[in-house]
Image (cartoon, rainbow, N blue to C red):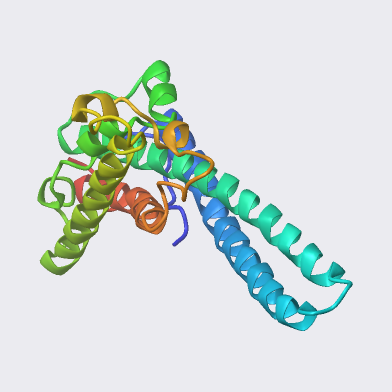
Length: 228
């Protein structure tokens, strides 16, 4: 969906709009690039399997070797893009939810320092807190069906974040699981071991989709409160 048209006047400031747009466009680009990187990595591995069959019993296996090396390089790139996507989309969720919440509750506009801080990747605890507000509070101007859909998306993403908590707590199996308050201080991009599947796996799409919808929720709120 396109980024809504905001005037930058009235309840929402130009500073907030610029930050929201910047994270939105970055996340959207990263979503497209991650999908392409994932497919490229998968393709190289599949072609490598075929080349391996063709090279079996032969003295020269250059094609197979090249494809395996390309698959490994593509996988590293896919991971790097995925980390960038999580970093920016989680910040977009944090900022978008904060702006929407302050508009709903009639609070003062965010200052430069606060906006800048909200544009950084949140810790897992901050992301959990961000996702704790029900849709009936933040999407109060939506019709019941849309609100229910938004609430379902919120719960699914929150469940995904809780899954990251569980995985991060078990990173070092030589010790007892890490306490919840310790894991809450982690950022996903800082604790996803390079020799393991990334902790965003199976969860990134939910985060990106949720982040993409927040500017529209802000726009809907402003449309229903214009002139008040």
